[in-house]
Image (cartoon, rainbow, N blue to C red; front, top):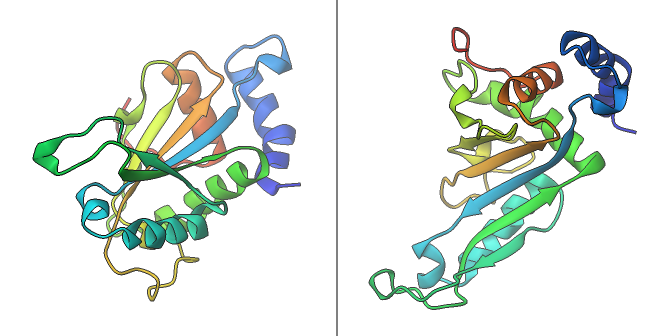
Length: 183
């Protein structure tokens, strides 16, 4: 079992139940999945091996093999054909999700230079939160020899809540450091 999940079940869920005034423990907000996206863009059109390199890097960071996203339409101005690879994504659930979230909050985010917290502008109005990371190298398991160019990624946390305030309370309990002074 994962330590963050155990901590959620023993400490955070009862605390959230009391804080949000929820009658049933099964109605307490929880994480469903975390989706990690990495856009490749024009690089993949020029060099097909870039997709494999980035896939290996993303697999090391998230702990599972990412899925290749392909272009749905051909766009001549970008020299993009239908079916060309343009990005990678990995959907994490269960133990991998909690492991990744714990590494993100306790190891990776504190390594960001001049980090003052995660912006609250990433909420979508339905209880989901998305944040961007400009460099994958903040994860210590990614060795510098593997990285040829600095690339970013997008992390989306999908919750069972319907409101942003409940999702924020859940993510704060799980350890995501939000910026101070924002509401």
